[in-house]
Length: 72
View 1 (cartoon, one colour):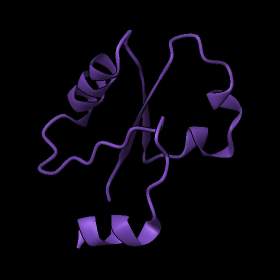
View 2: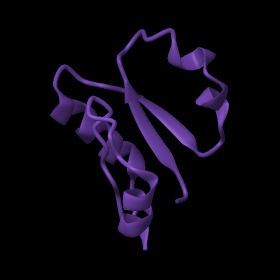
View 3: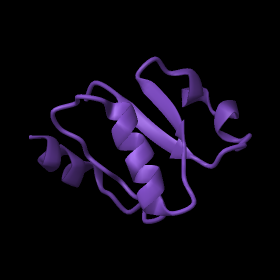
View 4: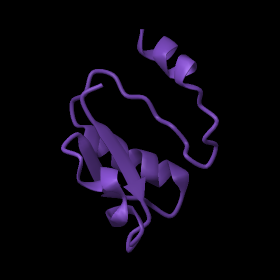
């Protein structure tokens, strides 16, 4: 994985306090009113990435083994 794009609510003050907030491979974008708007903002930030995985953090039950299989 080269980069992670995270869509957060505009004005969110919690994310900036997390240790990973300043990680060089993380790009933060403003999320939208709907999940689809947030996904679109993330896709735009991903630019010309050949592959993109979209994870809905409202349903965070992604096991590490499943992610490894997706990336294999």
